[in-house]
Amino acid sequence: MVTEEQYTDEHGNTIVKKYFSLLLLIFLIELVAGILACVYYQRLSEELKQNLNKTMMENYADPGEERITYSIDQLQQDFKCCGSNNSADWQYSAYIHSPASGNRLVPDSCCKTVTVACGQRDHPSNIYKVEGGCITILEQALEDHTLIIGAVGIGAACLQAGLRRGSCETRIWGTIFAH
Image (tube, rainbow, N blue to C red; front, side, top):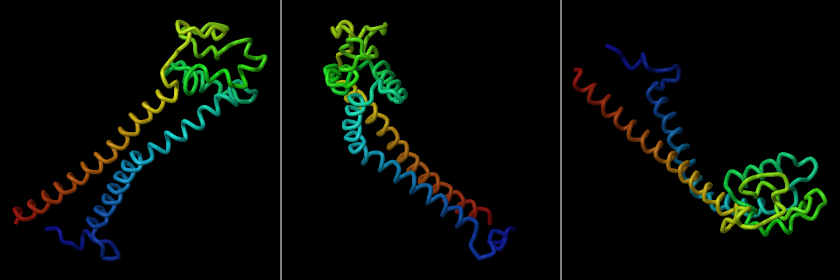
């Protein structure tokens, strides 16, 4: 028969106590992560609105900002949108007013079929005209993913709580019926 001394460390704490303390800590971290994901969604949304428009207007196609330009192009192509709020946003862009734009009205990444200088024509048959622009689509994607992250965190915490309860009950009943 196994005695409690065999499961005790040098400080008199049982290994089971340490195990459950660590599981409780993990449970609390997952629960907090899930709640924070839901709570901070609104703050992320506001930051997105402020910074996306500013970045598009000020940094697109700037020398040394190739990664930003690439990211905006990918965003517009992947989400099939143009501009932060709509395609008309680009008329205020430093890029559109620069000689580098080649008389484009929008970047070529706004085009439904990207070809060289396709952004010179901003007709709806050629350009993505999404109500609310890229912001609306990004907010929806952010909301969907934030809710998933929050639900998974809270769900995992609840599942672990249930499993811990079940393993305790199993151990107690096993001990009772083993004697």
